[in-house]
Image 1 (tube, rainbow, N blue to C red):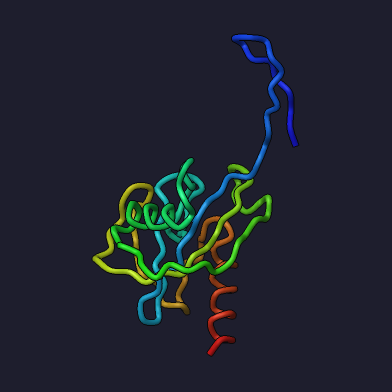
Image 2: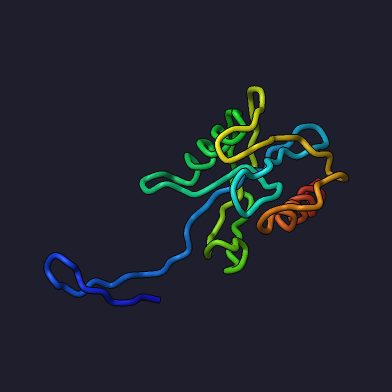
Length: 148
């Protein structure tokens, strides 16, 4: 979908495209728990660590950066899990997220856009989760248990 606008400098016609924004999220496990961050900014709620991909950045580099900013952890063995693209998955705008599974090192602490970072047992996930992250975790648990 595009619109046309005029360049204010030269008057040339410019196509303006509306595309979904690329984002990344990380599934970070420890024992029988999953790391979630409590979001500082709207939409509020608990979420997987992640965020927007910067221009010129690979999605792999983006999730390593975002996880470090939000949790203080260094990710490695980063592998893609699934892609989620429902137009209503983020109330701010249409986003497409690539979800990664990763191993980690370091001590976790909330930072950047997170007011809190905490490992939750799988059977005690918080009620209020942001975006479609509860569905992502349900899909991951099903996939993980089927592969055993």
